[in-house]
Length: 249
Image (tube, rainbow, N blue to C red):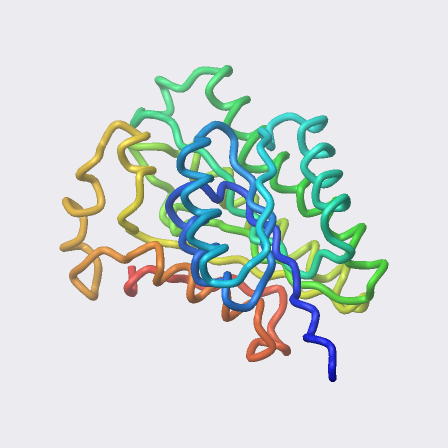
């Protein structure tokens, strides 16, 4: 009798809701999962149960990616449960309340860059250290259309963090491609997730939908499908690329 094929392992940060949760649910038939989240215990547990129902082995890795010590703890847990790390969806991120640049504070910007940029880079670093040892792996960083659009009068600081992710994606890809690791990014557009409410505008996506060439908002699942395609063998010759999932915006 042949042994069952070993399932690849995917770490998803910010996996308790929104795009991260959609990625987990869609990946569950094909991957075992390490799901990171910061504080939403109930949301993370619900995603875990949904993924396990599809046959995935799932661990929860609670931790704040703004804290390097907690990033180390996240990866220590991954190492304790899995022998490889085949994919990273580098999704954890925050947005501030709608504001003009003249209203931004140092504390707000410091925290946003700690999570969205430094945290994402440190998470990718730890993933690469493991993927280089095995000679393969895939990373998708989550950017935003805001990186191109600037988000004037709403959250220019958030847009700047995502522009940094675009540059980081290209640089890291060039560093690790020869090691068998592909690194790409996805820029979601106006997507129906909780992030708009966290920015103080729960109706923002619906309100701006008429400015999208497709005349509608997108779903977290539509973004997740693009992310999982970039991680799949179907995208085996794709690296250093940023994919817009924006309805043409």
